[in-house]
Image (cartoon, rainbow, N blue to C red; front, top):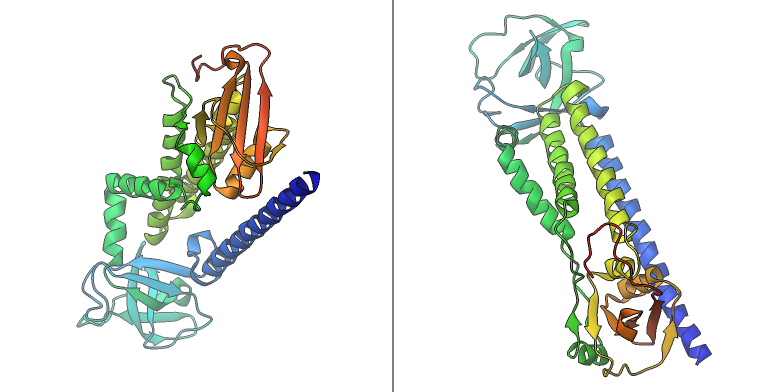
Length: 340
């Protein structure tokens, strides 16, 4: 029996190690993607090499049209004929260079009959055109001018990110037990915690989308872009801290704390239900939850002794794991999220 339990635990630890490796590889890949994006396509307001511009007007037709998004990159030098983004008279213009000296240049739009009236310093060039995204600027402007669309997009993003991944196929003996079990959701009182968490998540998503729109419209870093980035950082941190605090049930007494930890996986079973196979004890609810997450399995809940003793089971292909919780006195929850 001891050797069997040891082999089963070794297998689960191997799975946990593989899962941890995949997690770190995913983070490393995400870091590599973000780093590559920043080095190659990072917006200039945050130190990147690319300046984004939305075309307005007909001066560059047929090369550029109103609503096109132009990506320009700073170059060590420019030549006559280059399409460049310049700052002039407090605005931005995408035109061709028609004349230049070591310190100055003149420009002209393809569709204009006359040269531009200005002669500007070479330092006014923000970058040379490298990529055109036809019509994409209109989409960014629409998002900027329609906050409701940002909210809808953020909600869809929330649904995608919060949806559970596809579960593994459950073993036949677990399926047979679940047929005799009842899905258990701890009874909760109305409270503002869930709306606050939802609001924080939506705030972070909206702030992130707003940041992208501001960058595409070449907004200066201070103050709007800085505040938008601050909103992303603050809302994500608050969401993480409050979420972890709640998921670990730190505001509750037993057995409410354990019920809160297991809340999305709980199935209550009757004392008459038999659980075949060998059983091994675990020391904490957190350890049992990790085993359930590794196997993508539910947690079976058995109530004994009029609620003074609770047993929680995780059924795996190799072994059954149980966390035995004894409650000396069933006190009400501190926070009031749970009813007795």
